[in-house]
Image (cartoon, rainbow, N blue to C red):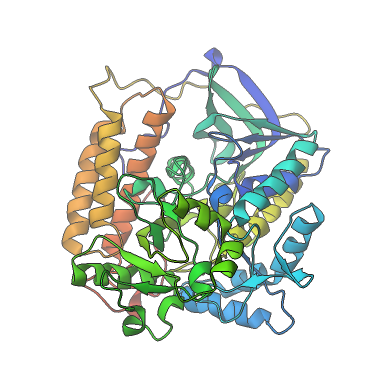
Length: 535
């Protein structure tokens, strides 16, 4: 993809301020926080957040953290469930490592002050789709992310060696002779600066804002994947985008995730006629994996000519539901819905980016000096379909792993940072042509939802790829000057990669469903890797 420039904006090193740190962490979600906390206090850490510490996808996570905490549960069972959901593309070694690390990280959060829900003095464990056992640790009923982030944010703020820059947009990674050495960063009120680091950790989150319907917060625009791609790091499995089956659907309102744990408690999916339909699509019914449930909902919507289906809780104990899911009750009440009496309108939405930056077992990317953790990565844990509540778990385990690894690597470097020979990044491409960023952003989101969404076809993907390429050739070379505009350039880059990967994969596997190739193919039980150089 030669149209994508190495740097989004031209800069002259002699005209920008310079900052130095031992470890740079890009991203303020759970993975970034956990990475910063793993760096010992004799090293300096600088953590960048695009908005603030309360604006990540981790903050709004509802379901919980999957972990074997019940003596009757087994690590092998959690591993088998994860491998089964991943449809042949998980790395078994990574799955084993993450699953067996889970209890230790749960206990660490508790030691830091996390208040997880309990029953009879023991951790209350929920069950979600794809899990064969109750093993989902949760907090505040359906607000696990908020409690976990409260805990780690408090810890970060106590550490004097960790400095936080809010409203800091990482425009690009800085590289020299094939090694990452920091980032070009824009901050509100200051503009651009060069941030040099001995080691850089990328935890920039997902890409849900590529789609018209999404559970993700506004910050999830694929920036981390795009800047890693421009810097030369390898990407993998970009076609695998997970759609959450149940998002509150009320025309004119923002989309709100309805946790899968609700179906784990026995909620039924019914169509506009009140008919329960999931048993017709899968013997696991509402507890089937997310990709199965999402496609079933779309099919039932088409059969009944409706824009949505419903979650029905009327057969469940209303007092238990109100205690277990206070966030859901409050959200529905804003729309005059009583969860004990009224059916809740839902439909699928883009939820989690499974593909991303390739990392090894220790969280190292293919670009020396760059580590990564969380949703921005392709670690091998999720394969072709992420198992419910394995995402916060991955952020905890790999966040700690990359923090420790980056700290050790930083210590091995000379005490003083050596700034590479300074050169201009390039010349501006000329006068900026008229560009309506918001209109193009909405158009891209609609295109991705329509042609690169839950169900895909070769012709639709070809049309989307041609359109994205046309828009990109116009947008990528432009010298833009605001985070909103840089986000658009990143979104076009990631959309191109997702669409191209989806067009290449001529089969259906996990969350990737091709109507023209509806079955998995043995020859496609492999990964697709992208790299800007020699793609």
